[in-house]
Length: 373
Image 1 (tube, rainbow, N blue to C red):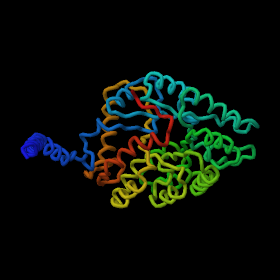
Image 2: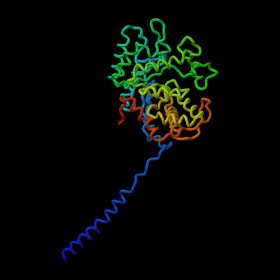
Image 3: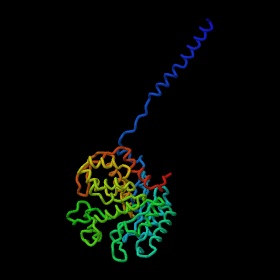
């Protein structure tokens, strides 16, 4: 009996010794981690990873890239086959130089020539050019609006994006998981007289060659949309990023129809004034569109970067522009636009949506992207 009583005392002593640790463990298990805020603020701009999926580095100078480093943003430099400005070969030389100087910070998309389109072996030559550029680090291919608006075949017919001669090139890209970026057609205002335009009067007054209201002999707006849709039907495995809101900037409903129908299609947002206008006209609808299609929208600016004699002023301007877009996506502040849109307010999108638009979608749609170390 004495041994039993002694054993019970030992048990009680052991229980009392371990009781505090048990209590502490229970307390620790009830401590919850403070959840992250649902929304970002202006103060978060520097800390959030960002990727601009549409810039044109037309200079070997580096102030623009230096500001990108300060703003925590990576850049996709796009090479175009355009008939004005810096030639395609020089654009690619600049891209290669900047990629080498800023590995991980800058990546580039190549293109191919169309001035030899009517050669019998054009498809093979275009594919060879893509192979070479990819071996040099290109992560995507760009087709510019000269396809559909300039380029003609031997019979004088406009070459649209769904032309069979392009099929081998697009099939090669799909097979090798090379994304296609395309600027096809123009905003719908391009087919309107200048005095009826809201946002694009300045551009088309300077580029009458692309103002289709003056050129009824050119393909219609609808024919560009139809050709793009047909191309996507023929190449469902091609990763396709349609620049400038898919040239459907005037209607979120029409854009939504395409995103629903073509799961291999995303769009870049390099038509911000149109988004400001949508937010003004129907804020809730615009915000809901971004939330519903959050996996298909890529931040982009289409900035043309030229040599500057005032790097500090350029850096300030670029930074302020980026902050303006950040404010639009992350807050519901009242804003104004210089294009005559008037007052509108930001979309105040959830953090997870902002993260996708600014970075995660770029990494998903452009698998060749390498993070900056």
